[in-house]
Every structure is written in C-alpha cells, then in structure tokens.
Amino acid sequence: MREILDELDRRYRAGETVAVGTVVSTFRSAPRGPGASMLVAQDGTVTGSVSGGCVEGDVYELGRSIIASGQPVLQRYGVSDDDAFSVGLTCGGIIDVFVERIDADSFPAFTDLLGSVRAGEPVALATVTAHPDPAVRGRRMVVWRDRADGQLASSRMHDAVVDDARGLLEAGRSGTLHYGTDGERRGEGMSVFVNVFQPPPRLIVFGAIDFASAMARLGSFLGYTVTVCDARGVFATEARFPGAHEVIVDWPHRYLAAEAEAGRVDARTVITVLTHDPKFDVPLLEVALRLDVAYVGAMGSRRTHDDRMERLRETDLTEEELGRLSSPIGLDLGARTPEETAVSIAAEIIALRWGGGGGRLAETRGPIHIHEEHIGVRKS
Image (cartoon, rainbow, N blue to C red; front, side):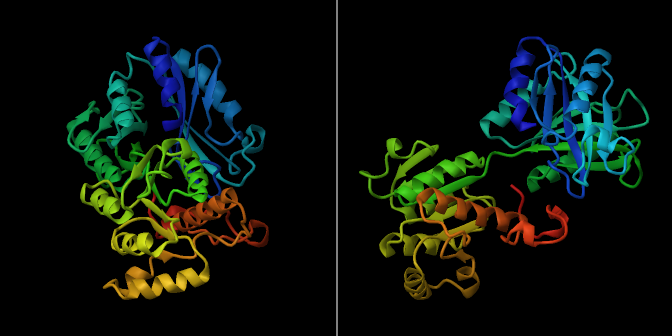
C-alpha cells in the first residue's frame, strides 16, 4: 500500500471515497507480493498496481462497484480459475486480492497510520479479509508496538490479532493470519491481512567518489534511505551527491560506530565501502563486520582485496566475521562505468537478499521467484 499512500491521502483529505485493491496472498510465480495495492477513484483514475498489468482491468471494475456498494470482496486470480486467461494472469501464479472501500467515515485511523509511516515509526494495518459474518469482513485495526486503534467484533479477536500483528511488525513482514471465527488460535473461518510499514532500509555508502554517486542514485531508486560518508569535506558535498538523502563529513569508522550505538543500524542495513584506501576501509570494516547487517561489500582489485584481508586478519576479527565481507564487490557483469558498477553491486545485494543465483534466467529451470519460506534471508 505504500506506493498509493500519497494519492490516498489526497483523496481522503478531499472527502472522496475510493476503492483499494491489495494483494493479500500469493502462490507460485506471482507477479507482485503481498501489500501491492491499486487505488480506484470515483473519477475513474487509477494509481498503483496489483499484478504488473495482468488483472488490473478486473480489479478496476470490482473497485468501481465496491465504491457504490461498500461491500468488500476477496477475489482470487490464477490459472486454476476458469476465467484466468480472460483476465490475463498467464504467468502461472495465483494471487488473492482484497478490494475495499475507504473514506473518512470508514477509516478514521488513516491519518494516524499515515503520520507514523511518514515519521518512520513502525506500524501495521490489520484488515479482516474473510469471515462468515459480512459485518466483520473489512474491519480494520492500526497496530503499533505500544498501542492499537480499532476494535474487532470481540475482545478475543482483538487480542489475538494485536499480538500476532506485533510479531509481524517486529519481523518486518506482511502476511495473512488465520483464526477461528472468534479469533481462536486453532480454527478456521477468519483471515486477517497484516500490512506492515517499516521505515525504508538504509544504504550507507562510504567514499565520496564517482562510483558512490552512481550507487547513491541507484540505492535511492531501489527504496533505500541513502547516506554518503567521507572524511574529506571537499569531496563529500550535497552538490556532488544529489541522489543521497544525506551527506556526512566524518571518519567512516567513527560515524558507523556512532550510528550503530544510536540504534540507527539494523539487520536490513546495507554497507558499501568504496574508498579502497587502507587508512579508511580497514578501520571501517573492522566495525562493519561485527554488526548484524544485511550486507557489507568493499570495492577494489583482487590485489587490493588480498592486502585488505591481510590487514583485517591482524585485527581480532574472527573467520566467521571476515566471511561476511563481499569483496571484490558486486556480481560479474563485466561492468566498466560507475553506473554499470552500481548495477552489479545492487544485483549482488538483491541476489543475496532473495536467494538468487545471479545467473541468466534463460539458462535456468524451475520457478523464477523463490518463495520466502524457502530462503534463509531477511526481508526488508
């Protein structure tokens, strides 16, 4: 839903009623994951996407009817359905899309939800997507780590969903929960989709060089909050790095240690060391490789890498910690320019995040998308 929030806010503040379709479950090679959303306005305007173009036409028509009726619908699309090819989902996957009406009367907590998302405060939206009682379907709760806004049909439902939504919130993962009709842990009949909004993950780029400028632009495009850091103030300027959210002049190892101490580095953080200068990168990597982060990569030739590893082994880093280093950085794409190199680095980060092999899809067999339960990586 994140990609439609600004448009939803604009329509909401204008007093309009809209329909929102959200992917709540996926199976096999689904084109988009849970949380992908599409907004249909009363004037026919569409924002966002639930399938990359496969079923948008049908969701659009559902949205138009739900604006009028107010009754939410959970709709499944996939090759197992008789109408699969008529609506265009020919990729072999299955998606469940929940389409609901949203306006100020039906969702008074939206303003608080949006405020938390924009402030970077972790928050989750729990919505009942299936229940035998039509009056329960579509009920919502906004859940924070320390509070909740909204009430389901019973206190048992409420308590179960709040507890489980907070679990997903801590894990940083959206998903559908299943309960008995009164919130029983062992039962069926009620499904609740929990849409988790975590602050964007961080990409910290060390080294104010031309490769860093390209990496900052690409990182921002991929949805990271990008910081560029270098001790040399003449090079570390906002004018040279328009793609970064912030540019810091400080010794890299000192800055990273302070950020970690302040709790601003977490398991989703990506660190790229592009300095290839021992006086910067060795002290920095000594700090970085001890942190619980998603990725640490360092630029340099193989000779630079060998020299760097010798220096790092002189510290008290363990072999396990040294093994976390991706160096030389990036995938073997034959990259030459700063922009191509940034793509190779981003490709390695994506492959490690989702368990990809980095080879050509044309030369592989089996599913294109690896299901999350089959990979031991963190989701951001």
